[in-house]
Length: 195
View 1 (cartoon, rainbow, N blue to C red):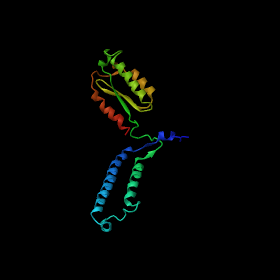
View 2 (view 1 turned 90 degrees about the horizontal axis):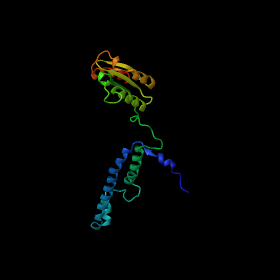
View 3 (view 1 turned 30 degrees about the horizontal axis):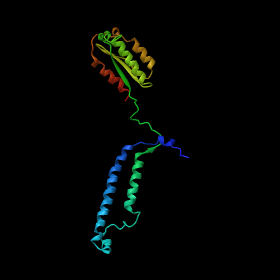
View 4 (view 1 turned 90 degrees about the vertical axis):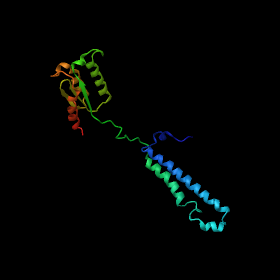
């Protein structure tokens, strides 16, 4: 009867980069064993009873000595540093909690129909799709033409945001033009509250 290996599929390391230290550890073990074998070459040249007193290491004759203890402790320590786990912890760095601020051009050039049905309608569709990809995340809407205005500050309510988005048209802007730089201070103002 085979053991149940289902639990192993969840096994992982939280910090696998620590495994890179196994390479210097292996190099150290290889260098020390090679150095020990080089010292044994004097066995044919120097009398064994003298060679025993010339060696500096007193612990070589025992199996469990400080060197072998270090050799065995190092991989165990590295495995512990790698953080073995059976439960995946979500990384705070991988969670997208950033607020989204949409800066929408509502100038008269957005009424052109080179993109069907119009540039503005296509932009609204893209914004709706983007909002759908970020459920329960905060978003704000700022429009600009000859001036910039905050339509809606940060909110997680997609329905309200989509209603405001549907009502936007170039005719609601007080001045004509196309100045996205006017919207940047408003973006800064909206995002200042999130920090």
